[in-house]
Figure 1 (cartoon, rainbow, N blue to C red):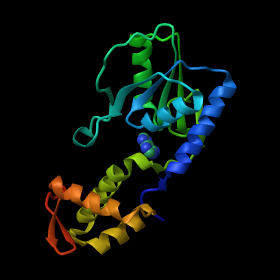
Figure 2 (figure 1 turned 45 degrees about the horizontal axis):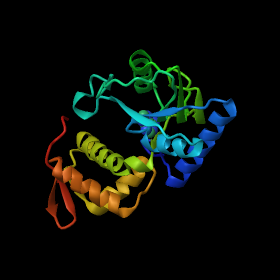
Figure 3 (figure 1 turned 180 degrees about the vertical axis):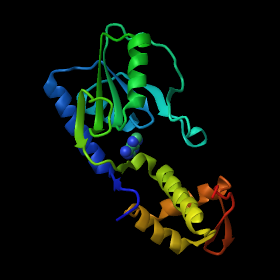
Figure 4 (figure 1 turned 120 degrees about the vertical axis):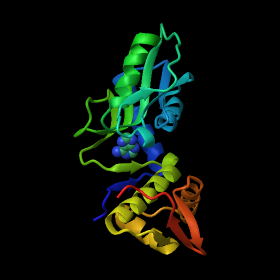
Length: 230
Ligand code: ADE
């Protein structure tokens, strides 16, 4: 059993799910005149919904959790709170997934208050019904068992985070500081239960070297440079 349950999502699945989601929206009779993508996860689904629903107007709002440095404060924040006038519009707010739903709720409240569309509905490709604080108006897949859905547009970012976490945790548990490239690949499969194209591991390791977390310490070897707190 992998330590972190991960489901790799393919581009083909994204197109299929977005099309299925568009179909549900159409069947409901709702005809949005503007789509609002929640950055960054909602970008690709929102663009595909524009295509499948024949919507020309596409806006975006960036609502996200504090990442990395400020992890202690797991609050959602709006990064660029600009104003537009959506009077006379039926809006559809789109994200990839409703996990806790916090980022979406923050965006929804802000849009209703500041952009004032006539109507606003929420759509997501996936809804984790067991942890979400609300149910979106439209979703394609209901997830009951929490997993990390590895979407194709964050493959490098996720692989980088996954490797970093695996190396940091292993150091905390065993003091291991030096990894061969082969060990990294093997452990990655054990930890996460998935494999990605080879270039993602290479690029992720390059990122971790650039970030100062790892350093090259041999032909195909990487050593911890920034030691995690034990
Ligand atoms: N973003 C927030 N929760 C997520 C999950 N479970 N999988 C992928 N992306 C997410």
